Image (cartoon, rainbow, N blue to C red; front, side, top):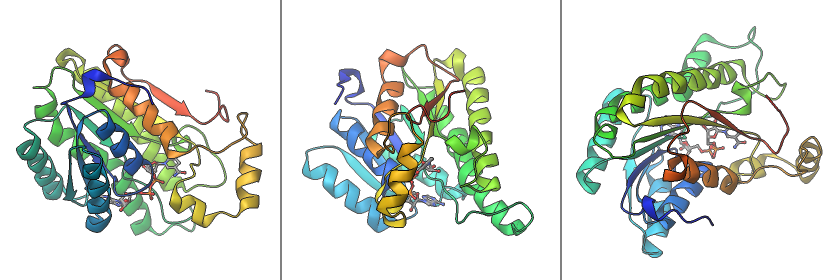
Amino acid sequence: MAHYPELAGRVALITGAAQGIGAETARLFAAQSTSVAVVDIDKTGAGAVVAEIIKTKGKAAAIAADITDADAVARAVAETVRQFGGLDIIINCAGGYGRLATIEDMPIDEWDRTVALNLRGAFLLCKTAIPHLKKSKAGRIINVASISGRTVHAASSPAYGAAKAGVIQLTRFLAYQLGPDNITANSIAPITTLTPRVAALRTEADIERIAQQVPLRRLAVPEDHAQAMLFLASDAAAYISGVVLDINGGRIMM
Ligand SMILES: NC(=O)c1ccc[n+]([C@@H]2O[C@H](COP(=O)([O-])OP(=O)(O)OC[C@H]3O[C@@H](n4cnc5c(N)ncnc54)[C@H](O)[C@@H]3O)[C@@H](O)[C@H]2O)c1
C-alpha cells in the first residue's frame, strides 16, 4: 500500500462506510493513522468496521446517521469534531439504487429517494462540513460518483445516473468556490466493483462476462477505489481539484 505520512493525525469522515467501498476506504485511511469517522445508517455494520480498525491499533468512531436527513448529518459532523478535534477530509461514499428501471416505469417516490441518497446526501455533508474544512490546512472533499454518471449504459437506473452526474457537477462547484480556502474537491467514477454485495448478486459467469468488456479483464475491487481516494486526500494531490477520476479499467475513456 502507498504510504502518505502527512495523513497521520488528520481526520476523515466517510459515509456509507459500514460495508463495500466505504468500509475498505475507512480501513486504508486508518492504516495511514488518519482518525476515521465511520458514518452509516447501519449502526451495527459501522461498529464492526470500527472494531476491526481498533484491533489493528487504528483510530475510528462509529456514527449512525441517515445522510439524507440534515439534522442527522449535522450531528454526525459535530460528533466527529468533538471526538477527533477537527475535520480535514470528507468522503461521500453512501449511495446506490434499488433496481434497474426505465423512466416510464419509475415511480416518482423512487426517483426522489434515489436522488436524495446520491445527491442530496452529498450536498448536505459538504455544506455542513465546509466551515470545519476551512480551518484545516489541507481540506479535502472526495465524492464517489459512478460510471453511470459519465455515460449511459443498460445496467443502471436513470435516477441514479442523473444523480451521479449531479454529484460530478456539484464537485466542480465545490472546487471552484472553495479553492481560495485551499480545499480541493474531486470525484471518482467507479465501474462495477466486486464488493461483497455485488459478488453475492452476480454469478461467476456474470463476473467473467463483465470482465471481458474491460480492457484490464477484471472487475474493480474496493481497494482500487480506496487507493485512489488516499492519493486524492494526500499532499501529492494538492493541486488536483475539480476532476473526475474514472476508475474503470479502461472500460470507458472520456
Ligand atoms: N459497487 C459498485 O459496483 C459501484 C459502482 C459504481 C459506483 N458505486 C458507488 O460507490 C459507493 C459505494 O458503493 P458500494 O457498492 O460499496 O455500496 P454498498 O451498497 O456495499 O454500501 C453502501 C453503504 O451505504 C449505507 N447507506 C445506505 N443508505 C444510507 C443512508 N441514507 N445514510 C447513510 N448510509 C447509508 C449502507 O448501509 C451501506 O453500508 C456508492 O456511492 C455507489 O453508488 C458503486
